[in-house]
Image (cartoon, rainbow, N blue to C red; front, side):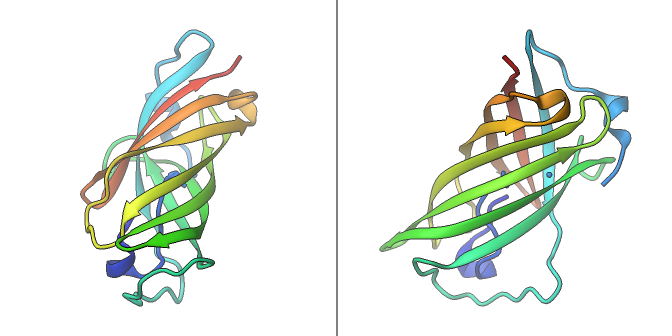
Length: 169
């Protein structure tokens, strides 16, 4: 869920990127269930917002932006969910910026429910390919009730690869 500020204005920073999460084929490819939790990988691709523009401006403290992604089991495969992320720029220093991001993943099928997550993401404003980062899982609903863990988000071409490591105890 990250894109460069310079390239896309204030389009997105994370997963929630997390990274800042429409329908149903998730059951056909259920993730491995770890003891008292889940581990699985999804691919996120940004859904352009209506009226979104690429400003190319350097972010400023207080800038807020939102992002939405469709989630896939494989790149270009079946849609298994969606996410929504809101980020606020909290610090800019030289070519680096910090954004506090909060997001929700909605997964359909088995397992299903919502996963909430947040992260303070530091990135290089001038870098077109941001580094990987971790997003903390802060809770969930459905099969993800009482979820904790993290999501490792890694840029992967037009997608972001998201490795979910979730415990439910």
